[in-house]
Image (cartoon, one colour):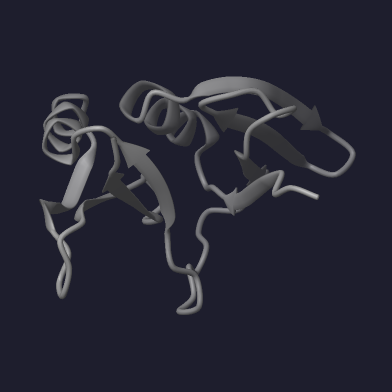
Length: 127
């Protein structure tokens, strides 16, 4: 068994695709429209679906807002240098909501950015 994907509901698919591909550097793996169901699925990731865990961005046509809820936490991405990643994400128009630095009660360097729908993405510095 392996983890295949995490699904996020997004309001503006093009805006979200721009964030995940242009700001975070993922690739669009596939995008499929389902006119009968009035939704579009787009899969993005750093590797292919056959060997990596990816994100499924679900756009339900006509939905203008989602409540994120209090149970959801964040997506985590390993980066070699969290400080440099924050600088680059900011340069690309991304929103850094917690600059890179050591986590509370530990030494691991982390940062948080926010996608266009308000989902949190944690950057964890790893070699």
